[in-house]
Length: 269
Ligand SMILES: Nc1ncnc2c1ncn2[C@@H]1O[C@H](COP(=O)(O)OP(=O)(O)OP(=O)(O)O)[C@@H](O)[C@H]1O
Image (cartoon, rainbow, N blue to C red; front, side, top):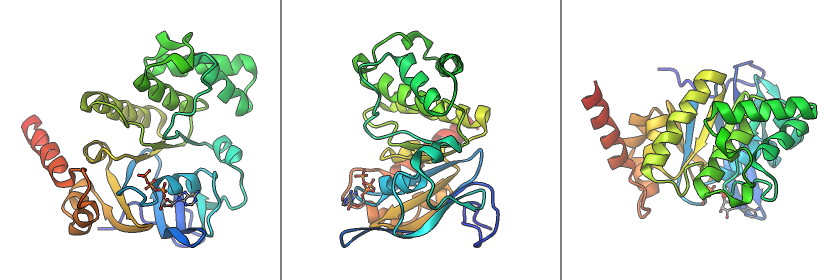
């Protein structure tokens, strides 16, 4: 079967956000080595791998926060070489950060409004957009709260809401469920699926919660030491010996994760 997220040939115009042959070197350390990856529209792709595999570096590359040593990022087949992070965002490629990075002294609504203004909206339109996004995410009650005083999980939800301002075409979520309970991670998973349905955006989900990734994504890419070691649907990834080997000695439950997901699906069917 054709790989649905395989990169297109050079010059081809496959829809999606694409990393093509990405190399990243940090003073002798090869953080990414010839990595290919594509996030098609309206699709949730997972990116997993043990600590230090290169996941956040990949997010930095795909959002213009960092330039690759070699290779390029393409949007619908067009190279984004030389485009700034701000312009990646204006072209509809949004991200969240592991640490949230909200403006802690500002209110929640203000955090979203500032993002809208940064995208070129007028202050009035940015405020309306900020309110609509909060309401759509069921977070309207938090609008007046100070961002720095939010409980941890609300802070993470607001970070996603801020990324939704301007209705991005692609959304890259860097460990959005960190610190959440399984129940909260399940709710977040449903929210991500809803965003994809309603906005039609493509999502790249980076998570250490492997069970959540198996449950949420239709396609998963596995990185280890800067290289793609597996790519496929949840079943393929969960049954991969290479993946099991990469995770050996970590606490992630790759096999147990998918077995329980499949059991629940059988019960629900
Ligand atoms: N700015 C930097 N300077 C030097 N080395 C870096 C830098 N950023 C990342 N690295 C190294 O590159 C490798 C990949 O790091 P990266 O943060 O992308 O991994 P990760 O898969 O996101 O890890 P984690 O799951 O722990 O967040 C690691 O060895 C890391 O130490």
